[in-house]
Amino acid sequence: MDCKNCNNTLRTDYSYCPDCGGKVVRQRITNKSLIYDFLERYFNLDNTFLKTIWHMLITPEQVCGGYISGLRKKYLNPVSMLAISLTASGFILFLMKKLAWGKINFSKISYAKTSSGGAGTEKIMASTMEYSSLLFLFYIPILAFASYICFNNKNYNLAEHTVTAIYALTSFSIISSVYATTVLMISPQFYIDTALIYSLVMVLFCIYISYNNSLDSTKSLFWRIPLFLLIFLIGYFGVSILTMVLLFITGEISIQDFIPKK
Image (cartoon, rainbow, N blue to C red; front, side):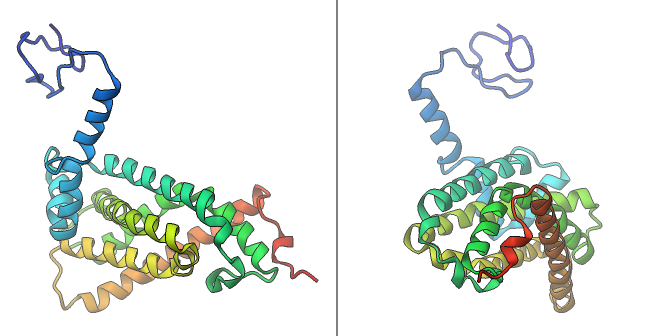
């Protein structure tokens, strides 16, 4: 018998390949086995997913620093975390469109008002939502660069700081998806009104992760945190401007959306 993953020759009594670690599958896929595999992978208290999320909260340096130093089996890798995070974000987007959108008063959103009123704000936010996953990915290099500049006592390169940024951003996204789901079902307006606070908490969480994964002193946080926030804000406004330009180019919004209605 050969391993279907690496073609290594196996004994018939093997349950796992000793060469690549792949599981030996002898039975056909059924609905029961699919459900079991899903629950075993994502909801077993001993699995790497929950362990990764929990340790990102209490000892993030073990997860991020461990992966950078070569630890690969104990925690979920950043690419898998990114995939789960994007799936969770897609679910939140689905709730926003199908459940919450009609309950939001866009004219009351103070941070996104346009001269044309609620209709212009709604159109711009709807167009931006279509690119939410892409915008999410844009935040990764911004956070990585801010971490590289502000928290680099271990002399990590930019790619290694990118690993830290992915772990930080995806962990926050996955954890906060529980909050987002609950609030969207209870009060969609509150979720929209507090979006800026939500973003600030996200950045502070990323700072917490970067700091714990570095050897920087506590005293130095007095200048490191403001500098990190400044770099992120510059990148955030840059992405926002780029997004608006793309929306104009693609015709999803126009100058008419900013002209007050008579």
